[in-house]
Length: 399
Ligand code: PLP
Image (tube, rainbow, N blue to C red):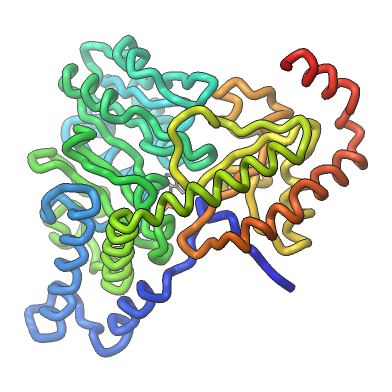
């Protein structure tokens, strides 16, 4: 049976070049990067080459990159690691947004539990934070602003450069979760003006379990894991050398893909998918359509449909998509991202996320298009909630 995977925001396949680059570090190059002998020096050199590659991807110095186990750890290290803040110095104020990934949202909830104050700024109907809302939320004790670069459900890009300026003017740290942006849009930490930026390997065709945190020179960061002095004492633990080598290779491939203009091809495929669905299926809409978005993602609401039922029906026919964040799939609550954008709970529950990867082809998109309209129509026919008359009235009212 043919299987097409359009759920690359959940995880991406490791690219063949990445696998080839990492494989020797499971075998002949097995040394501990902290050992002073030949085996250690070999792997140390590979880790430092990967660090250079990550630094080039985001426009910083190699010494400003800390390798982590992934996006969740990077977000936690950024939020809990700042010196004289949060866990060690409660009573301070943090600004985040209503649409963050749970790695940030639940970290902020934990800060609240230990006595910090947190403001969750809203987003508009396009899924964007207004930098003026961040400015208005500032307090004399605001120490950290943490707002994502690209949303995992909608792909909507946030105005991080403006938010960076607001944070800098207020002398607050600015962290941005760039897990869904890395490899999809050019990142320049100096232009963004952020102090901390997190990346995850498995969202950019490196394996699961590796990531990186950019930490601006001079930012005081306490390690979350206590142990050896790895990663300049910012993250203890023997380095995951194969994973780090893979992340370095994935970063190199991402830079080459930007230079070749590959991302235009990807947004072309995404747009074909999106436009055809909108044209062929009634009572649909793209969440965040008019906002700037990463080139691989489209989130579509199919009114009067149940997203979970659609995911299952499409999976039975060989198409893998998602209702939104992988970790909230299966949950009864509608997506906090889509409801924050003003979607009604039933619209949010009837939304699907299609996300392409570097391996995605136009044949994959055509395969999806051969299934989605008919599957939505069939489920709507069976659905007691899909009331054609109500939807037509709504369409008439909107036209
Ligand atoms: N941040 C965002 C925006 C994400 O989409 C994800 C994963 O879905 C994470 C953080 C967590 O990254 P990881 O899976 O590497 O822990």
